[in-house]
Amino acid sequence: MNNNDELNSISLGSAGNNQNGNIPVPPIPPMEESSNVEALNMNENLNATTDNTTSDVAPTGENVPLEPVAPLNYDVPEVINNSNETPFLNEIGTVPPVNNIPNPSENLDSNGNNSGKKTNILIFIIIIVLALTAVGVGVYIFLNTANKSKVILKNMQIEYGQEISLNIDDYAIFENIDKNTCSLDVSNLKSDTIGAKYDFSISCIDKGTYRGSATVVDTTKPEVKTKDVRVGVNGNLEIKSFIASCEDATECSYAYENEDKVKEALTKAGEYEIGIIVKDEANNETLVKAKLIVSDTYADLYLNCSTKTNDYSVLTKLGLNDGEFNKVGIRTYTFTLSEEEYNNLKTNTTNTEITYKQITGPYEFKDEDHTLIITKIISYEELVAEVGSELPTSGGELRDFYNSKGQSCLIGY
Image (cartoon, rainbow, N blue to C red; front, side, top):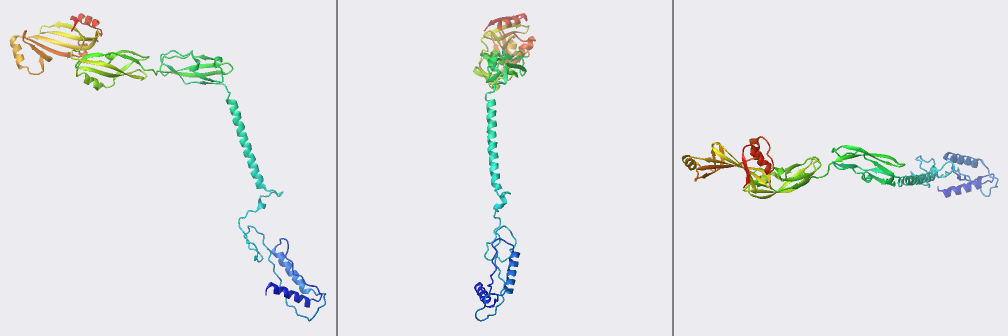
């Protein structure tokens, strides 16, 4: 039976059998939200009243027996919420529950206002306040530092052996302060020891005293002048012979740029450019060039010193270039032989060198006077060993020195 049939049955049954004449009224679904239990109890009470009530209206027509009327169930819509509980009443015709729908009432405070919106406004206000505070602090720092007067001390260095500077600008930078109101004290500064540190101070009126230190350094390269050197083939050569002067606060030292090139140059006559590295004690270095003249004649002039023994005569030729001893020595030994000895020696000698009476070297035979001449280069070290001391450098002093040794010396070719 559908709902229309039920309603027709209720109307017909009520009109024919209700003795009191009252038409029973079906229960009205509640307008406000109520529990499922209350709705069920209301239906049961109304049905009981209907069965026990007689109609006051006089029946008309034929009496028709009434069939029992089953209580009607009305669907009460559930509140649409996030509950997972099964509804008590039939859910036909209701909107199915949807999970995780935000409930607007959750963000309401006790007065019904939206507390989430108030929180967002509060955070925004805090951010604005913090931003304004940061700007204010920045402006304060800028205003208190931009125009602040100060003295910035420099990393001061003093060149070794130089005079101490009295210029205050060499020691500090002055910001927003008149340097004329400041005084410099350098009474403790010295320049006599490389690497040493000394204190100085700057005092400014109403600004206090600033103290710093200065370090002694040597950053200046040596200033060098060179001169040409003439030497014989395979002659001896000292590097200092190329140095006319070296000006520096410390001692100068010398080294060949290419020592092998110098050794090779000494084996053949010619002119060569020699590189010389000059350093001071602080390792400041400079490279200079000098000319080396290697000559078959060994020197421009010679100091010729002669002596004689019972067996031979000796002529020592000491080379002079520009009046200075070039440390080249050539010694000639002359032996006077008998005709027989001379002829035998000459006949049996075929090598380029000869050894005679413990003298070895290139030789020459002279038939006119039956003499044997042996010539050899004498190193500077051998000359020093012979006399037991260093030799003078100037030609005049060298001549006087050998004359004092019993030799007869003349300057010539």
